[in-house]
Length: 348
Image 1 (cartoon, rainbow, N blue to C red):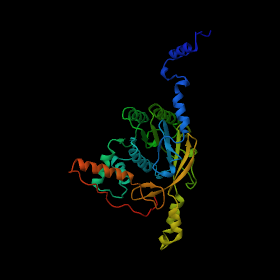
Image 2: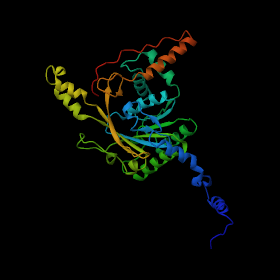
Image 3: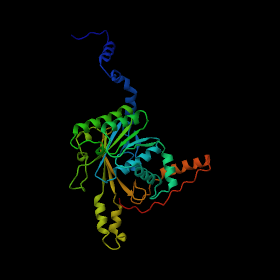
Image 4: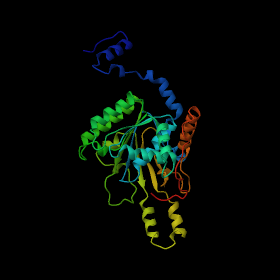
């Protein structure tokens, strides 16, 4: 027999009170009115923090409450790309928490310093100034080897809730102790990480590998992400980092010819991008596409053109910080960037 109520308001109140848990999450749509208005008026397409490259601004943004899978083959530059993005986030006053069991802190830090100062061999002084400028705005979990999935989830939740980090980077899924055919474990992990993004309004980044392929020249898609289908189904976004192996192969052949650097064929090859960043999935607005990037070997940055210079905005921020410290404390030494970055752009 259906319970009778004097009004719909009384019925809804009783409904909430009879739910065993998470009662506070049961809300009428009316309570979201202003949030809905704001979303519609913004178009839902231009919110979030942009990536460092101008041409990507209208294609993709890093939004709160999102999870992005960054996928690619081995040595395609996924980790290096996320390192550069982490520095960019510092400029945007956003903090990053990193779980990277594959590399020691010294290796990760040296890459951050090279990318920040935009030189091949940063001086000891510039490294210290870089780390001082970063402070706790990029923080890492210092453990190499295996990190249990439960530990990774707990750390991500703690970093979002207590640490106030806007970006949680897990590099990579293969270091979290889940077997390749443990699809239920993978599904549970991805669901829990995505829930953290939603609950705490952060952006979770998960690095994944692509399945081995006999044809690395073929452009991959999200169907090539290694593991169970949920790894591609659950996250908000999927970005594939795809190295241009045709360019590498072409340059290797040209190097066998004397005077190859003066040939038009070589210059044509150099103008080709080293990497494509492929937006395979973007749930918030449905926009997909790709944009090219070039590898700058001295700084290990990914840049926007074959003859473009590395991004110097981070270096300038570090130099300004060091200058302010010097003015406050004259004993603080000047920053010495180190060996100048090469102007010619070589391949990765």
